[in-house]
Amino acid sequence: MGRNKIRTIAAAVGMFAVTIPLAATAQADPSEAAIDSFFRSLQKRGVSQYYTPEQALGFGMYLCKGLTAGRDFNSVYSDLVDFQAAKRIGGPAGSLGHVMGAAWNNLCPEFTDIGRTVVTDYIPKGQRG
Image (tube, rainbow, N blue to C red; front, side, top):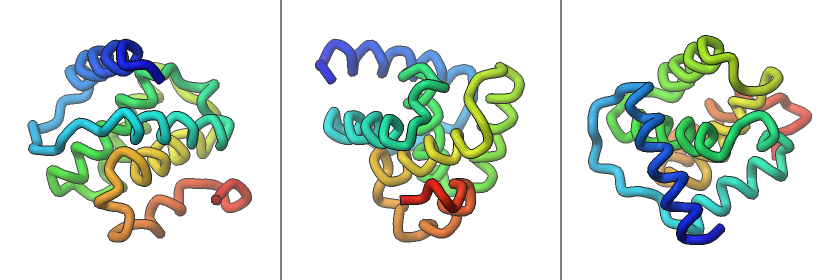
């Protein structure tokens, strides 16, 4: 993914973050390689078709910022389920779980070891990898 595309998505994520407020945290922005890996993971799982890149990255960054702020996965996930329903975006059951898992593993990997089982609870068993 090119640098200009990353900047465009980052700007859109900033606008998205205004929609779902969260206390500012000290988390650094993910690297270009991490973002590329995040999107490859979504494509591999077949859920990239249900979200725009901006939506998917916005959801992923919301998860990371929530975890950094000390929130647990379930409360952040619940926020996003409510937001997704209100805006009528997203795909079939489990698609948001894939976005959250891809974010956890690629955008904020510092949290992967403390909650791996929680993330897989939201990914249908036949689709876990």
